[in-house]
Image 1: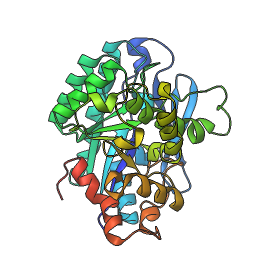
Image 2 (image 1 turned 30 degrees about the horizontal axis):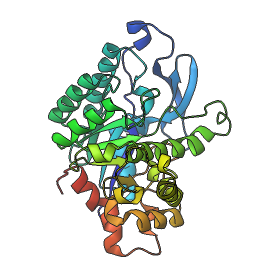
Image 3 (image 1 turned 60 degrees about the horizontal axis):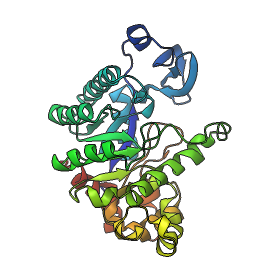
Image 4 (image 1 turned 135 degrees about the horizontal axis):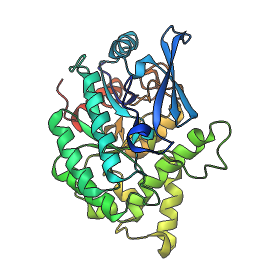
Length: 339
């Protein structure tokens, strides 16, 4: 089977000292560990935020040869890389965020240039300034990106924010696929232990982003030409769709600005398959249909799918044709990829 992973992340090996350039002590940077390797023998680094350790990573993030070798070992034909949300800089002044977007977008293309038949990139944009975000999205697509990744909120602004919807309409007009990744998770103080920010907060953010698009009237206002995919299987959305539908039907205040019940909009968006459980995957298939699901791993992070493609390939209730749709065919159509 052909396999295209649409959800994987990268970091450049190095980038300019953003703290020295702009000031402020919370910029991301990489601390490399000379002569230290992980269990697989790959070079290690620590992603830092200012002077605080944020996440351990290894050379698959920046070394295309390592990435391609692991893709070969696990039967992944093509992969789409995107920035980790810590690089977004949404909270920074626009000139700083635009600099970062262009810096990391160009770096992503440099990684993909090692094999531009197998590696593709999604760009980031400075979403706090919609004009700048639209311009950078258009520039990025012209330079070789296949889509745009955005965070699911900008500060307190959810996906139904007027500016975000303007950006999404721009992407619809220019046939730019959009991938929505949760970040800056809610209830940070209450989920700071045991990685609950990632295991609880991220799924909640993904559900919130979809629900805000539905109830905020986003899908009613943005063209049906928009291609938009939400990460991590949409979080808890599929499991709680019945609750959302029930509230919409029986409480007028739960309808927001949406013209139709929530289930009406299931053909307006896609989800990735990073759910790690056959029953969860089956629920997504039941709710969304196989034509609305794109294979994603969250590679190369520890919380990603460790055997890339195994979940779909071993799913007991799917036909070979359904598996192939999710593993590659849907992604090829969504991102306009050549065979």
